[in-house]
Length: 283
Image (cartoon, rainbow, N blue to C red; front, side):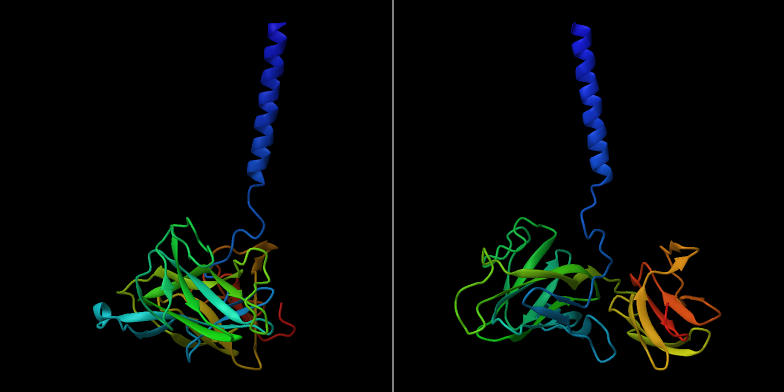
C-alpha cells in the first residue's frame, strides 16, 4: 500500500514537472522580443509621440552640453513631439536608461532616482534599470520634451507615458487609475564609444547601382534607418533566404539580391531590415 502511494506521488510529481517544462517552453509573453532600437513614433488611445530627427534624419541629435560640469562636452538630445486630438496633456514621462548621464532637459522637468518611480504617475516604481524624467504642461494638446544626455549615446527600446485630462481643460482623468497611457519608442539609451568616429549620414548607390540611398546613423555610429530617392522605393521587413528569416546581416554594404533589384541593411542593426528596391511592387 505504501509502495502504491509512493508511486502515485511520484507520478504526480512527474506530471507536474512536465507541465512546468511545457510552461517554460511557452514562457515568452506576447510582443517579446522587441526589435532594437525601438520605433521613432508610437501611439496610445489618445496620444501620439514622435521622435524629433535632425536635418539629416539623425536621432538623437548631437548638441552642445549646457550644464556647468559638461560645458566642454557634446551631448545627445532625445526630443519628442507629443500631441492629442482630444485631450489636454498634463504629464509626459520619459524613461531614461540608468547608464545615461543626464545633462539637462527642456523645458524644466522633474527627475526621479532609479527605483523611486515618478511620484505623480507611479511610472517605473521599483524599476532600477531606468529613471524617469517628467514634463508638466497645462491646457495644451501639443508639447515638446527634450532630454540631453552626455554623449555619445545610442537609442534603445524605451517607453514614454502621457497623462491627460479632458479635452476641454477639465481636471478629471479618463483612465481608471489616473496613471496615464504608455507606448514603446526609441529612447535614451546606450552609451556610445567616445573614440569611435561618428558618421551621421552617408550616401551610397544600392540595388546594383540603380538607387541612391542615404544611410542614417545615430550618434554612436549605428545604422538606424535609410532614405531613398525616387523612383526607387523603401520598405521595411524581414529578409528571407530559402524561406528562412535572415538573423544576422552585418555587411555594411547590405545584402543585394533579385538580379540586383533589392538591397537590404540589417538585421540586427537596424531591425527589422531597411531595404530599397527598383522592381515594383517591392517584396
